[in-house]
Image (cartoon, rainbow, N blue to C red; front, side):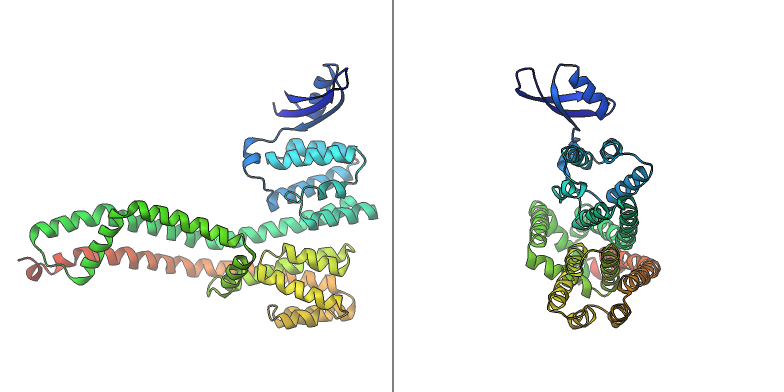
Length: 398
């Protein structure tokens, strides 16, 4: 049975707390009340994995919004729906956050106000959409739209991740193979050639020396690799570092266009759902910038927001950034002129999502032979260098 944390008051009015195992929140509350305690507040205890990794994935948000919408449409009260969601959620951290939101809603706060207290779990977009749904009395419909949005964003992320996974795995395998050859195989060949008094050709000498350097400095190589990884993560945590890296990614020959299309699709989809829900344009642009997933795109959107705040249309400022393709600028301009901006943005998002799908399929057919060729050249080059003295046996052995 799951573990629940509780707080309550005893007969003297003193606040007490603890943990208890129960089937659900209602069962836990009854067990605590049975001890003669009052003002009982119960929440699901955060699992260890939730405490270590306090993150909520796009998929978690999609499932949360979809299930929440279904329960509200079925007539289940918000507090009870949140209780059920907290029990069903596999993410321990997210479960505890939902329980806290339920507790705050019980005290009289709105759902949006309660969710806003947990920015690590609930993005600004979700909070704003919930606020709009509560105000307009269409919370279930709004949650359905949010669920669809996060499902599409999750699918987009999965496609990008799938495109980058193969070359990453191949690169790691190549490094491991090369490391194994240099550490375990090359020294054996070097010893044989030394015993035979062989005069090593240039390529073989390079491989042997590289092997010696790696073996004698393996600890420093490991430490240096760890330091570089830590420094890289530290760099990405800074504003300037994030800007440099995202700018570099957009310029990478193979993956740059794919990342750009993905970011534009996310931009259009996010802005579309916000505008269609009635969120003011300036606020929508700010939320969209935060949700763009790329610092360069986010900066471009914020610059456009400044121009819109000065009374200009969106199309012109987007063109001035130089980030968005002419097609996007043209459709946005047409959408503004015809009063159908949200619809045009939805079309842009759909178009670029399809472009991402096509690009991923194209990359899959191109990357596989390229990476296999890469492995062949690297590993084959080392093996050829090792066997080169044998090929020239007549002239290399004294």
